[in-house]
Image 1 (cartoon, rainbow, N blue to C red):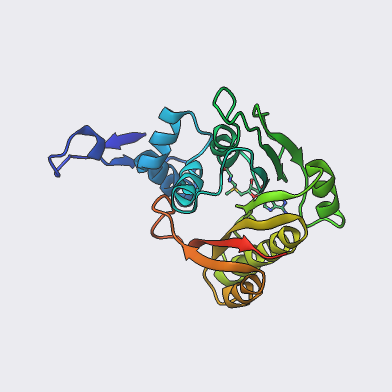
Image 2: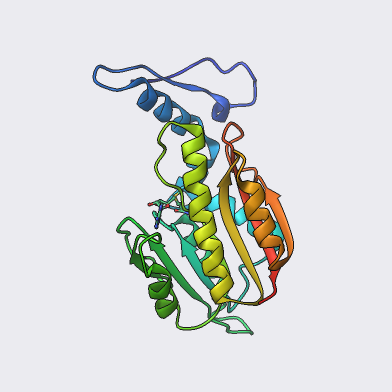
Length: 235
Ligand SMILES: C[S@@+](CC[C@H](N)C(=O)[O-])C[C@H]1O[C@@H](n2cnc3c(N)ncnc32)[C@H](O)[C@@H]1O
């Protein structure tokens, strides 16, 4: 099914490109997805590092740049399944066994049921449901230092529709952040290029000291995905 093609770069085994033969009954899109997974160094790294998905590296890289996952931080992770971002957050917000001994809190929600992760409170919830924000507030039991959203509706195949859907999720996450963030807090959300980002920027600039648009190296170059990182919440 999968065949390695000749390595011409001379840089070793890791450069071998795996080509996947199409199989009867499998759609071309599935074959291409499989081929991309097998050739993606972040997929391999995630397996080696014990992360549930390559998305973990996006939040790791954003955190390296903006340092929001600090000891004792209270974090809300919207669209958290299968759990890579939560896995990254746990050891950073909890500094058990160190001098500071600070313990944070992580509340994750997703449409999908998830396997538990020690150190996180995970809930199955459609964040767009009426009253969903109140439920998350209740589970949080107070203010948050970080609201991060990797929420993405399943692709419709129509670029503009997907863009508008994700921007609606971002906006809902932003209004939720305005309600729960502590002064100085951070908001992160995944966006897709397509025209409506300007409105979100305007909205965030009224409430945060700095608003940056970032494409972390782990975000696939051929995807129009980006992350908005808003720091210094002014409640
Ligand atoms: C790219 S995945 C998130 C990956 C996650 N950050 C990780 O590291 O494992 C996007 C997630 O958003 C969730 N999602 C999409 N719409 C949602 C909604 N309305 N409410 C809650 N979760 C939603 C999807 O179920 C999906 O699991």
